[in-house]
Image 1: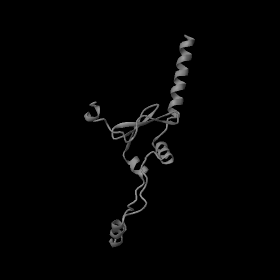
Image 2: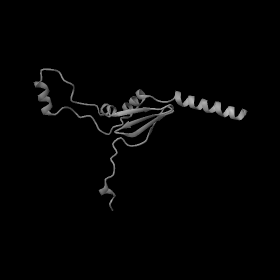
Image 3: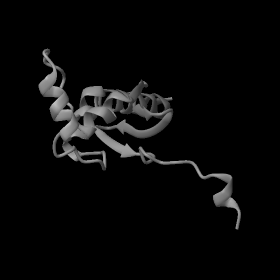
Image 4: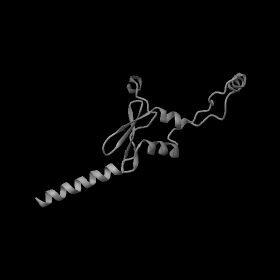
Length: 120
């Protein structure tokens, strides 16, 4: 009886520790910005046509240069669970956060194999 109670207390302590160390959405966004999860690089600047169009406009518009990491984060969704969090992009789990760390599950830009590539 004492052993069972001790095991139950230790199990509850483990679950509490996992819950308290679970990362959040803001942690993933900081992780993505710090580690540059996207392979794309920002453009060096607007093209000549974009520069001319911008000069012809009378209203100030949003900059044409977009940070690829921000674009990546806009397409991510987050599934919060009790002891971990999954990050999804395009319906596929790409990262799992647990115990204060992010574990890569799948590549963000993975493409599925076509039938043609399966034929020898």
